[in-house]
Amino acid sequence: SVRAAAVAIATPEWDSGPYFSAYLAASLERFPKSFSLRDVADVVGAYLHRTVCEGPALRQFIGAAVGRLAQLEADGDSQGATQLRHLLFESLGAADFQHLPLMMEQMEASWMEVSSASWATVLRELFQWVSHLDDYARKPQILRWYQHLAAQKPGGERGRV
Image 1: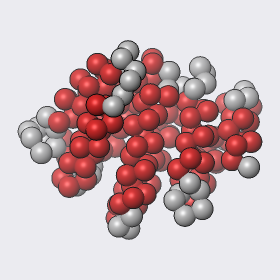
Image 2: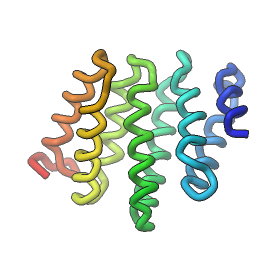
Image 3: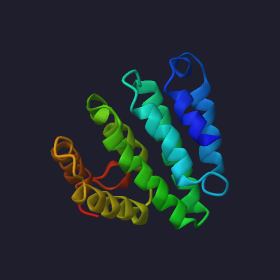
Image 4: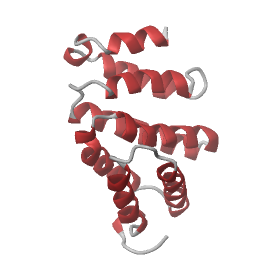
């Protein structure tokens, strides 16, 4: 079961093998049809709460999630895309504080390739999420990142969207 997998991720064996990679690929491939957002979030959340979670796994999670998000948008599944974006935002609150800069950098790099319409959606939804964030240790850093993103356009151009 998915709940059992979330518990299994809390064991060191998940760091020494391809388990997280395989689970991530399978769950994102099946999202949202046969894997719910909660199923994906339970396992990703359990992994991100680990103190040994490191850069390669974070890059892999963000890259895979943004890739699936782009596919959902291309398929016209705006609800699935919105849910996955929110999972990415929530991961900023779940991961160890020291990983925030890496995660924000990876998300930004991934999002620079999206269309202007998708970029505007990212900014709007990120602003809504940040405005409701109760973690006042993370909020200033994430808000500065949002302001930086708001000054960007997809493709690396500067300016307002």
